[in-house]
Image 1 (tube, rainbow, N blue to C red):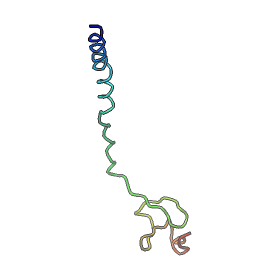
Image 2: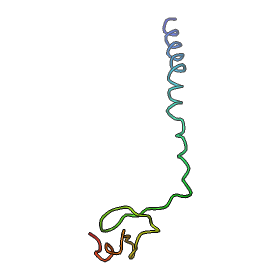
Image 3: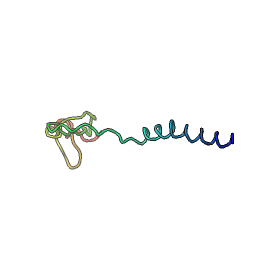
Length: 76
């Protein structure tokens, strides 16, 4: 009889504490904030590493540069 009571207590404790804890662990992560439609993409200068707006960068092939002087100087 005591064994039955201990099993009942163990099952009750599992449902009371473990099941809610497991549910909290599996809750979906909140959605990421929406992207600002006015945001612009930045690219890294292949010479000095500074980030510039893609619309203001000077490109040569697949490389982007922050200025014409750095484009002429090439990759560092």
